[in-house]
Image (cartoon, rainbow, N blue to C red; front, side):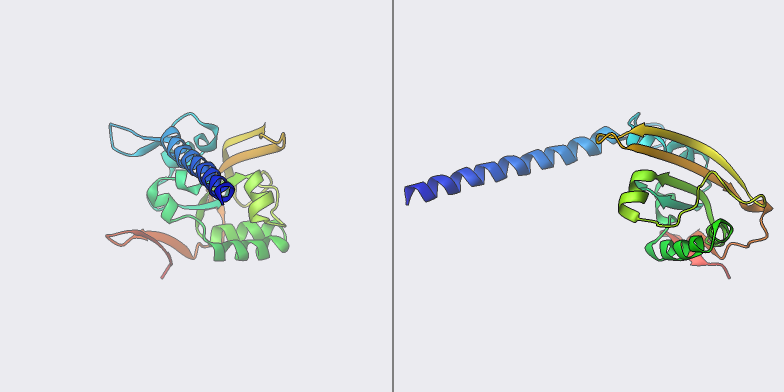
Length: 194
């Protein structure tokens, strides 16, 4: 009986230590990655690799620009860009288009109204599993893409990870975006253009 009580107490202590460690880790990561910019009270990313590659979009995007997020850390985007970023249903449409070739994929990207793409190879390959994603450095001649950030590095398992950010200039395309993101006075919402 005393052995059971001793074992139960030991297990409770171990679980408590693990829980405290996890809470401390969440607290530490949240404060280590973002801090308020005292000038304009917006969140800014510190010099940590997990969020610095979002800075070009946060700096260059107009309010309400759409962002195709092929990465796991969309919460490092400005709040309007976060609200206007890609959704689960749009991934399916993009994957179907990509299965029909690179040109079809890019037409769907523009049709969905995206102005920026965030790509994280780990997220795409292991979590999103976008099976037929074309090479984002290769695009049709009828559109222009600017690479804002492109970095490959080794992760903790020594896998090559690529993080890239692209800006799409669809002014040269005959494809008309059908979606836009608008502020309705309370929040940003993706909607079909009228």
